[in-house]
Image (tube, rainbow, N blue to C red; front, side, top):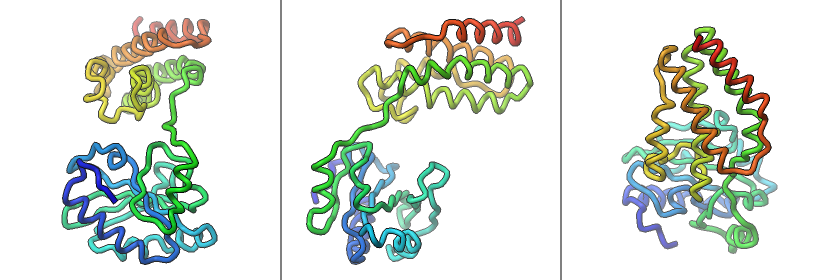
Length: 264
């Protein structure tokens, strides 16, 4: 295995322990690494994002024992499952002595092909994982401008009702939703970059990130109104660069409602 140039020494030490331990389990057929490991963009704050491919007929057994499996790796401090991100196969753990975050995604090897990046094989039996990867393509989910347009003006109305009702914390959270679901992915996609929400957007498109700052607000009406207006302005600018069937009637009514309820 050739490690990426940016792999920190502490991460490499832990990774060696993980591979040595998990490779002893006959049910494990391969171990892959995705994320910043795969793109060779790690630093000392990076996670280890690991795929643990197992025998299909023993997958349920492994799922039941997955905490016991990762406990065999020296240094576990804490761990929990990933239902909060919609991935119950995932275990998120911390390991000492360097306090490194590790994501263990347990999958049946028959489910290994779908992936969002060029996952690197760290260890495998009989090249089974490499073969699957070589015969399939990876693809990061892309934002769909039509899907967004069909929803955006309803979202604007929703945000306006939260502010008008005085539900300022909920409105503040909804601004975050618009940044992560609409604005940042579209901006990154249009720059030919991976549309991974707001992650490292400050470094990847700093000019847009400066504008995005204007969509961040404290939970007070005087701050929330201009922040939502900035979201609308940014969306319209991004939309103008796309081929999309616009909903002009919904746009007009959402604008009018926003102005009537919040600015009159």
